[in-house]
Image (cartoon, one colour):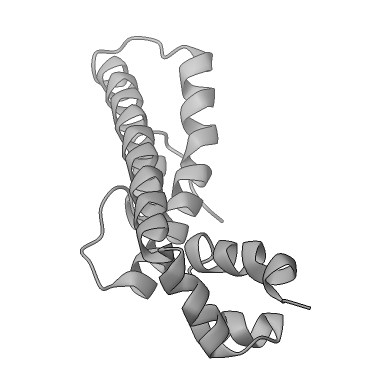
Length: 139
């Protein structure tokens, strides 16, 4: 019986989404490296991976831009002595941990693909924003 119907979809997912290597996939699914490599080449997993990463990056860039705009509007209100409404502050504080997690995931994915300059909000910048703008201190 062919292994393709049983393992192909999982192997493709591990390569495209989980960013695993051919050898890692072969080991995890108990397949031969040659089999996984043939599937990858025959079905153009490299293009699928590239498109997946590009779409994730576009979403994350939009999320970062939204967070920046929200942060600047809160900062402007604070600088002008205006009251910051609780809804905006709540939204911003709830977004910060998510942005950090997304950024960490992107960093791991990019390191596996190739070394590249960091973009967006880093964990250090998020902590600085929390302290400087929001007055929050981590314990």
